[in-house]
Image (cartoon, rainbow, N blue to C red; front, side, top):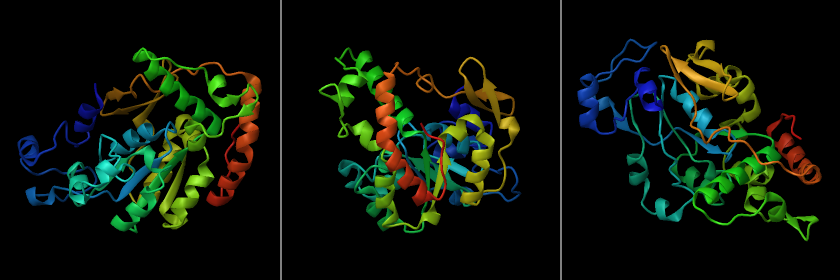
Length: 302
């Protein structure tokens, strides 16, 4: 069963975007579990997000969003908006941005995720201009693993389009020795550099750090912390997660129905030379320490 239909069973909409579709779905009234009040037609609106998953790319943003989507107090946008990082979208205005959001009622928070925001120079200031009190979720993973995963996705896309591609070693090593630190995937893993720009506009208390590795190993523990940060009622429990032996990671379940992330998730990484991995770990070590100091916690990376 697809994600949309799974969410229907959790009192969310199943492919419903317009007011007419919502009306035919549930007579313009829906009651979410844990709240006995009902919401009439004029309470359902497309609202600007109160929370944004800003990154990181290949850090687990899709898994985080889908897990959050199980919560009845969350209305999650399915697509990445790329509103604050792409001029062609930002120039369409906040009215256009609002129209991309799902319908929600007053008891829900609207969430969108665009991992491209985190490394964007323009996104922090633009979001601040929209809402200085907004909350952010930033999910991070080992920067070397993230880099390799980033490359793996690019490699897969180029192969699918029958385009030429290079090995990661050829891309990363200048003259076979010096690291190419200008490579975009390398730049995206410099978490401290990017977070510093966000902290120029938002206090650290508005940014919750999610451990991408922890989300894979113990999703409930990480999601309970997210619920508390967002002020949501405790809802997710052990029954919402099950370990899929074939895929090798946790999948979602609710009301007897199961759902795993699409096949692009958990894609096998190409083998990387051990010497290159050591060079990458050495390069990122100082950046990682800076990031740990900024967020007040450490991660077991490299």
